[in-house]
Length: 491
Image (cartoon, rainbow, N blue to C red; front, side, top):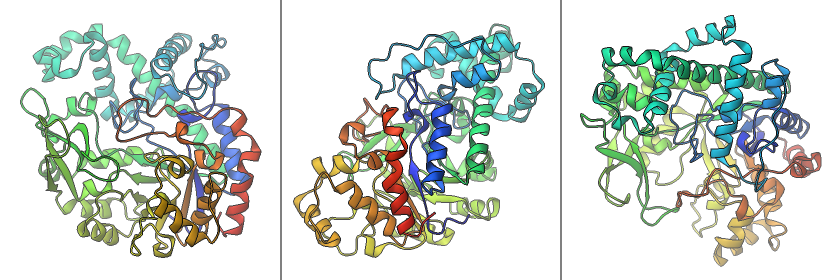
């Protein structure tokens, strides 16, 4: 994929303004695409579009294949003749924050009404179910059983936990209605998403998507494919994923996701990974591979360990990258190569020839060989001011940047840096980089502080909830971005 001297903006759809408590694929999304195109942007970067629960994390999905029905636009359902009219908007305590529990209840009720209105029997819906049955049937069954028992799949009756055919057949009549609703919600999501993506393509805007490395233990993926994970006979994890102590946390990050049984995956030619990647590439033009170092070796933590300090690096079979090369000759991927990056990880990225990442907030530590310093950037890379896991640039400058970092930044820029100028300074620096692709988080374009941070990996509460307001989505917010894009020769 050609990304030479291009740029874009990072903004997850849930962060768009709407009257329904969570951003969606409706008018705000179409307006945002128009604004990106008018500002000369080529990419809209977003987080995974996976189905999420009340925690809101798109990196801990209940399915790596299912889309997020929370992104459904009620207005588009009305326009498509699936609703007679709009309900009263919910009372939202804070327009800047997503209330996932409230949004889940609202969107589910609208899907139920749309299903009744449509009778759920259109040829397009039937075609969608047939095309996606390899993952959709398992996901719908998992969702129905979760609703029926109200607890994780490892606590279901043993025969259902083990997917005994007779037990599932006996239970099936009571599950069909719920399964049909889940399938219909996925159909609606994909219908709205395909329309938005097609509109973006017509404006010259491509989607930079994201692939989570892990999946939740309580997910359809682990329940339906336990042999692909290191779990015991009851399905409980033997080991969980995470990273050792690093920039983000002194005790490391214990994510709690079950780790993969890579040798088992290798035996069947990585068929499950092929299905995953095909699905993700059906929704995006380019994919960011989250936690890329995990594809080389991953940090395996004993399940009983309360933190990520006790663990070990486990090597992934080298055949996985041969599989990627043969399956996807164009390699439409970006490697998220942040954190503890060893020589073997660097070698893997170099061998694949895919872009890595450069984050300006990581650049100013006093080390001349820091790869995030602008003078050390390489063309085949993605440069950004910050990521969804870092503070906003203003928040970083106000709360985290050391005096030494500030001095180094000022020396490099050639003038004093303040809270009023730091966002523009780093945006200008990123746009001027030799890196082929430049991505700026929308919070930095708006000059927002730490309260607009999307995720803090060192915490488990309050993440993934930030939203922009209607006023912040005005065309004037994109003026500086347009100027910097033109002056840096990007598109």
